[in-house]
Image (cartoon, rainbow, N blue to C red; front, side, top):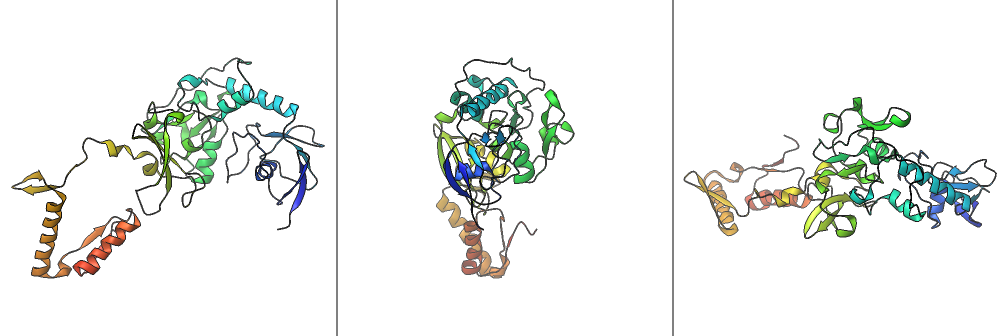
Length: 352
């Protein structure tokens, strides 16, 4: 596709028709702050923090939702723009109860970053009262409506990224809020608790319940790994503090999951620290289990298999592999049965 040009902060740059001003700026290393913009979804321009000046336009334009046009003259760093962004930030801060001292997102909050960037040290507008109580009943996600800035990123993530369509914006005016179907609690809705809404929330309105109080962003070390739950190979960050997992997030833009995780990949990690986990193999003798070494347990299984094969042949043995285990485990399972035991009696749970 042929390229067009426009003027960006006095410099002529190329762009592809269909790009927004924000995308052109990002391609050319020019920073424009955003709150509502979510990559890969329809631009809404709802937060207005990304405003820029376009020569000839009557007002400042939201760069995320304004298409770039040939010959356009765009400014991203003027006094009017900074004053407007500061005012918008002040209005967003006053829209709820943003107490950074006790917020789980302190240090990882875009609104906090903007307040610091524009030197906001005092409240210009009175703080709005919290109309809706914080929801903590479900096991995975805390919804703090007092911190919600109605940017809509969670709604877009649910409806356009994972396409679960469990939440949407509801009500009007000052009573606006993010709602589930029928405005009920999460655990009674169509939510599958993939946590994508938590992943994209730019403030502290949506946080992982299991991570509460386990570590601030600057206290944890991020370790990249592959999710162990199935063969897809989703990439995830383990947020580690004192050798323990505080929370799990997806690796943005990494293949194959591209910043997505399922409920197990994001939230089902605390079994690692369960006191009920088996530490050693167990062998049943006279109706009771006793602890055994791995060598003893594996030798016992191998002996039993050999006895069955000797008596009734290899087809007397069958194996069922977990279809959601990692690919390498399933491969080794079928290789064991076909090449070692000598039977094709190998299946997996998804078919049954």
